[in-house]
Picture 1 (cartoon, rainbow, N blue to C red):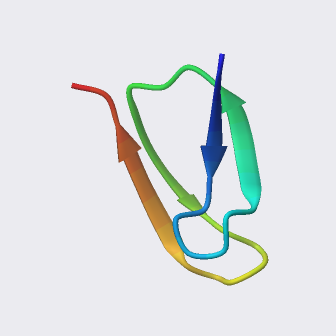
Picture 2: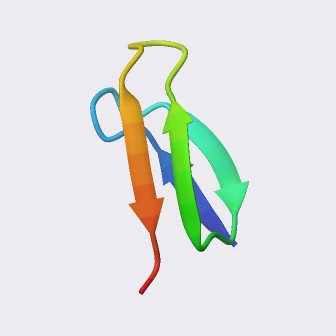
Length: 37
């Protein structure tokens, strides 16, 4: 499994496997985009 962290404040947002993910950090309110190729 992979930890998914906010790219701005480094808060842990999720853990698992992903293909495409868009998630909003509740701490700093930034939108994070993650994808595997």
